[in-house]
Image 1 (cartoon, rainbow, N blue to C red):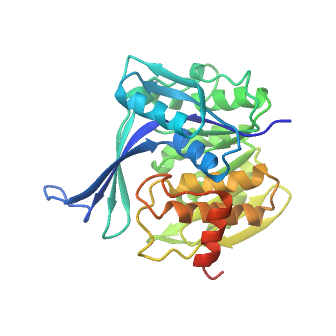
Image 2: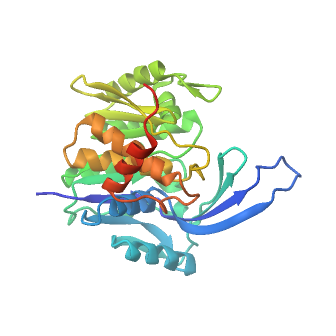
Image 3: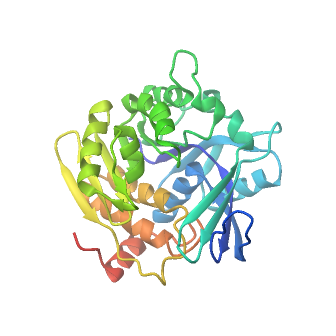
Amino acid sequence: MRRGFVTAGTWCVDRNITVDSWPKEDMAAVVRNVELAGGGCGCNFAVDIRKLDPSMPVSTQGLIGAGEMGDFLIGIADEYGIDRAGLHRTSEAQTQMTDAYVSTQTGRRTHILFFAAADLLTPDDFDFSDCNAKVLHLGLPGIHKLMDAPWGDDANGWTTVLRKAKAAGLKTNFEFVASPEEKIREVGLPCLQYLDTLVVNDFEIGALASRSTVEDGVTDVAAVFDAARDVLTKGAMDLVAVHFTSGAVLVTRDGIEVFQPSVKVSDENRKGANGAGDAFAAGFQYGIHEGWSGQDALKLGHATAAACLRSVGTYTTVGTVEECLDLAQQWGWRDA
């Protein structure tokens, strides 16, 4: 009986930097705090799952550098009990890093990326032949030069990895990173035929479906439903889940459609959105892994994201399943 998750792809070091406000060019900003943390979907999703349920097996695969930043990420994997046998190291490049600036004025985040080892990642760095996990969580397309390019007869390296995972008996999920719409379509659409689930945000589903889903920062929920239906027909997924500030929608292959409002997070409790998407994905996928209903899985996704929002770190304030759901109950849900 398969159980647990394997995360694969991006492992990076985040420098979470809190500033008063994001400056215009040639202007200055005042830094209030700098916090070093693990980042990328390979790290964040893995830690989130282990924090939600310390008994859940989690392993990971990826590529990091051989220096002290690589040592830092190894320490995070060990701290949270993540099997890192597949987390390879290279002396040919430094570990990927991200400066994640969070504005206290708006709560918005700005990411500045240093790709480094990310440019060297290839499908050869992934091996699922001895993997007993149930679900693969893979990403991030758009920021890995060789993975984004054609690989053999495949459209890109991501499809190669997904095919390997499917052949090994894994259920597959894919995560994107903030990219131009055309890049999301170019890399993402060929991957859809190798996915069992897809969990994305409102902008990403719009990009995949070539639909407008966000207008002046406001999500058009009806358009999100339409886009999710469109994308479902383009791939092999059993379900598509889409999250956004005010809620989330779920569309399944067998015709179930659900909208779930998000948790009411007050301004004083909202410290930063860095990692909130990973937290939602982890909560939702945990529920699906455990056989929960789609609505309950969406609720746990929102509850995990709400817990994450309490710090500028990517996973610092995520708690157990019970703690996250209790927090959501305490804060309440937005109106439908």
